[in-house]
Image 1 (spheres, rainbow, N blue to C red):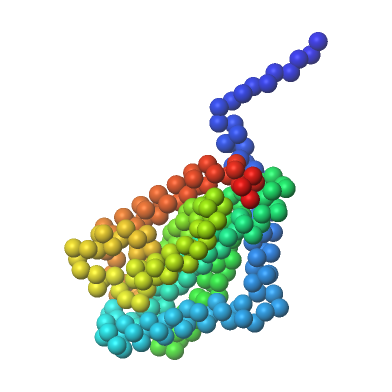
Image 2 (cartoon, rainbow, N blue to C red):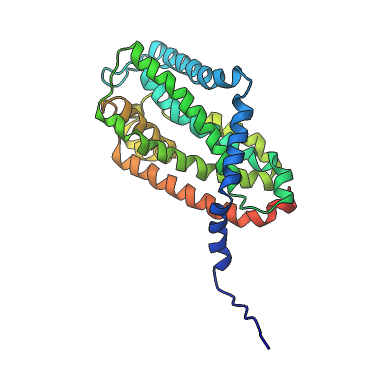
Length: 275
């Protein structure tokens, strides 16, 4: 008589989950492409908004901080380029938070009926913000041409800081996506977080203007290191990086990323019932 043995191996389900992420990669592509089409297909405002929003913000910040407040730029970098170099990563990060926080709710029908690793939903939502980031980046090239500003070799390090921004966006997005399912009124808090975060991030001004004794505390904002890195890479090193603060921000990005995965996985089994 043939008998089959059932072997229970510790951690097997966890291993299978990460294998399923690769197995369902086509769903990731589909969700990301669907959201991109919704944003851009047969629309003018979708593409224009990715350019107009950071451009208008750059004009306002340049007028307020440079013209009215009289804050200088760093080196000979034109103030609009300095502001826009910071606006790009911030727009990507804030857009990813907004997209991720609503991603599970907007895909409630899919989540409640079909099994797949739920981690796919918020991570695919980040791709939409990344496309906006790439579109808005074309305007930076236009600003450089307008001011006849040519970056040096440090521009080659920009992908490193883009990757850090990507990790920060996914980590924070996973936290907000899970919290928004459990506490529906959390969606009202997200716009406040985004707006407040822009004021406490060095978008309209250089972080070097923060008093020295407060810079390490200021770097508890994970986006400070990312924004300083973007400016350093784009400005040809004329913008400074406060290394202790940068590594602190980098450590917090890693912490937010892994804790976001942990909390999301912890809550994931309840998503279908709560939604």
